[in-house]
Length: 354
Image (cartoon, rainbow, N blue to C red; front, side, top):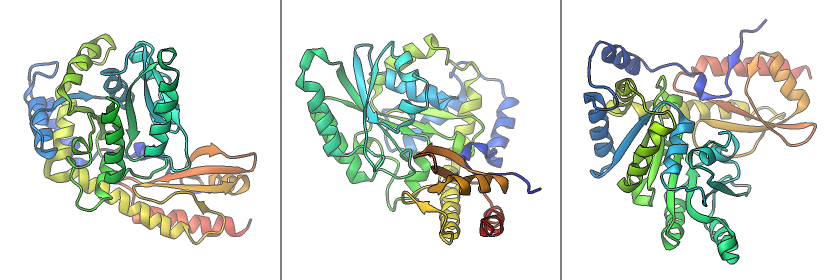
């Protein structure tokens, strides 16, 4: 029997050695609790340096869902709404948390085949909402996901165009950056500042957990006014971390010497290698470009079942009909070339007999 290979998500990955060492170090250091510690202050300074902006506020978090929801709740009210893509994680995978954290705020969605909000879509949506005036919820902002849920990225041109619409309509712009590092390194000569606040992003939910950390997320408020509201909500919603230093220390190690970018580059490189190897199989249809560390394939039910029999476990993403499925392969900083080669060897043997 083949040994199981989990290749459906980057959350199966472990902890980068540098981050593991940082956790051990901080465990032997006594500091003030609740974010009033040296490690959290260092984290804020690192964020200021990396994102080239002095007037920022940070809130270290342990959960991506809480990070997104608290960031949104900083401007989403019970009587208002946020526009996002229909496939966005905040819409499909967070169990109503943004609505719950905001006391009843509403998510309004846009659907298209690209998986990313386009300017024309956004303008049309806003016009539809405003047409009836007071009978609709007030639109407070827009949320984009970077990388998008289909593994593609928002270019700077796309972000700047969306920001222009947001600023024209007095809307805040939030970015779910669970795989922001993968998107960043996939673009040439684009700095963290270029990809966020210079493109109009008011707050970023930046995730490290998928890319080397144990459990570390951070909300970065480029608009400091929003941080004031979020800090009121963080205690009420049960997300104040007494030992914040353990999260901050992970982030510090992650940022140090560009580790976060190096890990993301490794994951992206392995995804391109895997895609090249998978392209030889007629059973697979690629659905989107591989711009980060995710590969989406259309397969028939029989092929999917055969993949499982080979003990290769991708993510069953969606069902197109009774016979067509969408599966996702995801690489991480720990994915080995030998592991990919083993997947290909199994597929060559297992699929050739069907």
